Amino acid sequence: MKSETVDYFFELKNREVRFEVETQPLELRSRGKHPKWAELGFNQCGCCPLKESDCQYCPVAIRINEVMEAFGNNQSIERVKVTVESSERTYYEECDLQVGINSLLGLLMATSGCPVLKELGSMASFHIPFCTTRETLQRTVGSYLIKQYFKQLEGKKPDWELLHLKELYDVLEGLNRDFSRRVDASISSDAISNAVIMFFATSVVVASSLEQQLKKHQTYLTNSAK
Image 1: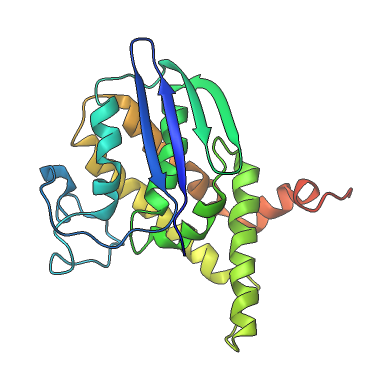
Image 2: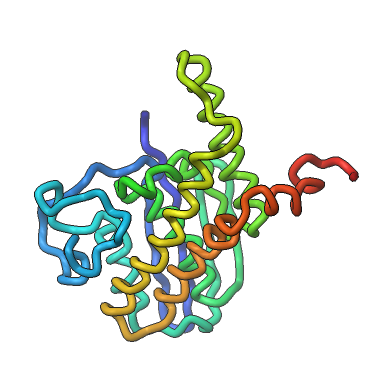
């Protein structure tokens, strides 16, 4: 499948920063020179199945290192103008820097090649920046159910009860805690750290009770009145 790109443009007070992100998941990369905080064994996530024989560096850390270097000296509440361009449309938002970085990190992490976050990779081709919690819920559950439909066509057992999705959210909750430690140990600015926490915040909320979250937003998700 041909990879498409999504471009993020950050307009700060004294400079502009651009990131071009491919929407197809990357292969694990073990070559090249990267900072120590990106080494796989540096505060490695408890849920990570990788070994240093697989790759020397954490694929997520490598993926977001450019963002870390670009905004390592910025504060989370700095106001920025963010333009996001895909082949289909353009989005624009004036927001705190942490909000813009959060949206970018979601795309970068899901396409990093991380074996845990690859479950979210199918949404990258339909990336929508600045999603609300209920929009993310709709996209995540909808994407998951589409996968089950194709499993059924292939003669495999589909998971219509969302059991594996619930397990994934539980894993993401732990990944949030562990990866945040890796980030916190590598920078002094809070912009990146807060953005990482925001990225996983929805996972923490949904993991607490997927059924309750779906019921809470049932009217919105089904476009029907109770």
